[in-house]
Length: 578
Image 1: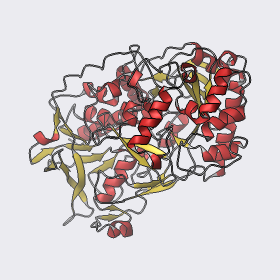
Image 2 (image 1 turned 180 degrees about the horizontal axis):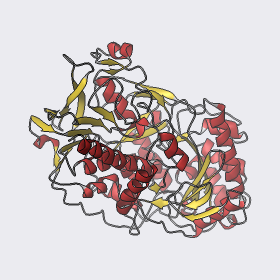
Image 3 (image 1 turned 90 degrees about the horizontal axis):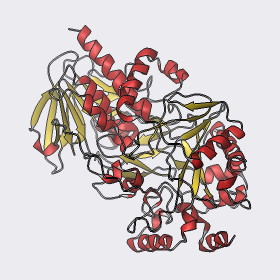
Image 4 (image 1 turned 90 degrees about the vertical axis):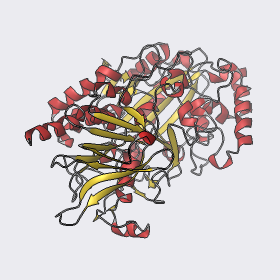
């Protein structure tokens, strides 16, 4: 009780924000592979020619490039740097450090949606797989059917990915308690360890190996034909060039990109009916680049003095982000350090996941609390508008003064399927390095909100379960735990007095991102089922921007699969056309 009293006196939000997901282990960063095809963009010629030009070396772009390189010449342009040799990316102990790095060279670029939710986008080879919590799980069979994908090739593509980047996680005491608590709460049956999406409770995969090293989509470039691939880092693509005169439809012919010094380069497609530009810049970057290149809503493009190549009004529409809400549960007993390993998949569209941490205060003297750093915003101790250097330093110092017991506990979160609620993306400027304006309209649709409420009822049952009893103080009620989150400045939204007693208000007031945003170039609206941009030749979009809703409980496995899947299909088309 004495510890709880001190926690109350210091401030509930400090306990919550000091929670978990900071890791120890002191493993070295993974040795970089010898990619002879990877270079800085400033070494590129002023003009070059390729069969395929892929814009974005992220979660989809890397497996796509590796596949296409087997029988073609491929240029992969990545606006960020290499993930290799960066311990903040590679080491599990440093999870969150990259997200709290707000420097211009950071692998993470922070943005704040118009909803007031703090978010991040990747700026590194390997994309979001370099920044996320590592959970690996496939899409449901129904998702595959709805997408019109070939199920056999989908499974082959998943296995191709899994050989390089997926592992079975350790299951220790705290994660086991969550698993058993979910089963007690009725999230059944127990499906054991599996990558498959199945109703019930399961142990999923992870992209962290047994030594705590992260394996990212960049590792899939190990499959590449080194003679067929060129990867350029710090290559910021400013626009796609089109050939219009004498053509029935605009035809993509090349891209303009700048290197780290601002020097302009041009890359063109070689002559050939099967050669293409493929945009894989993510749910923000792909619709943004189409608009900057003149493909998008006509009036919006004109407002930014962009020459209209094609009036495609649904570019940037259908933006969605799966809302996440969470509680921190202080533990009277030590807990292991763990990322997401278990998931409860309900039949009504709520997913329950969890992670845990221990006493890291003092283990790493200069730590600034990673994901929970006052710098980051996601679970910060300092509201975004108050983040002066002095305020950040004081907040970190205050967190370091907490007793070790304050850092013991776990984080249980709820994420919904879909979602149904959607928003839009608009340009702010003509600079591709600027974040666009994006609105997700979290919980606009009542069914999304109900799923959050239902999910938290499950979380309450997990916390109160016999299986979880040794990791919870008996006298802590659910309203108390909800209040920990309510009092943390997790977003820019106004808070309401009843947020700790009304689950509906709690969901609205404490919404966060789990970085699963998607849309903006959706199939049937911007691209056809083969991911070809409607009304344009020689241009596709292949990434999460094409999704109508998020696959599985966590999308990264399916995004990597899609890169491989479409690469195989495109190569087949090429061979059949010869």
